[in-house]
Image (cartoon, rainbow, N blue to C red; front, side):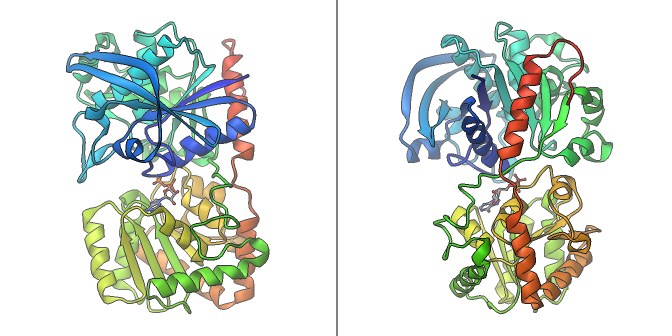
Length: 478
Ligand code: ADP
């Protein structure tokens, strides 16, 4: 039986800031259903400790660094038959944020996640665990292959790296390698050195057996200077082990037929019940329910194009639309949105993270706005379509792989040029569709008929794992 160990810095339902957490739960869950033996390793954040009942594992380790020694303990929890292991060091992980606080990255992130990675390898060594595959996600887990190369060469698992967003690379001062007791020769352009600093993700790209990213188009994009954020050359060099596999979403959790967060459950055969959700939501938020409802659910970061939406709200006549925005991030954007919503009664803004509200919005809305400047895969548009909400998206990354414009017999809208005017133009297109209720329901029905579950793509991961296990020095047939 294939044994897989996933390592991620956030995992739903325990910790979540974005799509990584969804995938770090739903992919292992889908692999378990396909017969693989799957575990997930993640840090123990304060909220997890306070909100879940955990079993302590008899294990204790001290990670030695030039910044001091750091103790780790491990806790276990079974959730939907999936085994989760939480690595506990209160100094590192009992903080307000996971990676940053009040907009500033924690200064010791290299130490927090470097030690987290080493504690995992100590754990594997102690219990003599030898999974076939160690599947690391993003830069926070990216120190694993560097540690294996230098300090844990007896670990023979194949290493899979998934890049969820290449803009987050884990770039630190060059002295961090010394602090983590890593030999000096790795501070070299062939390995972790990156423009005079150390890049954790770069190390993982070099040392992993296989690299995936979360959509086929993004896999191509990141090998170009425009989207590679300095790693495009390296990724071109390692293209033979790079593949784009589209993310899925958990069709049990995101299921309008069973979702307890929403007002009225529905499926594609009684899609008109979305209207009940919309009425209840609009009533609750004191919004008009007889205009098309547009939602935005995402981080307030430049990546997501929220600044373009804010520009549009500030400058265009929005009186034909009802708009709800859920998210947090850039302080400037938060302030501008608060100001707009204070004088426009058709715009509601919720600053913060709110899972139940997100579900209510997906179930109630007519359209989702997602004008991302780049989008590795994007889950929000997949969730929206699962709930019969029609996506209005940019032509980038995973959005290209998952959305098709109505002009081409599709089920969404592409914003061709990334500016406020073009988003507005597509909202007007959406408005025209909204005015033809039968056509609107047909398109929403089409969205709900698509399959973005993990079924196919989790199996593709298993196929790639087997390729790397059987690898005999020839190039992969990927
Ligand atoms: P990201 O780049 O942030 O990972 P994705 O589209 O891949 O974007 O995934 C975002 C996930 O986070 C989705 O499940 C979305 O519903 C959820 N999400 C984002 N912001 C919020 C919020 N403020 N409240 C609730 N859920 C949110």
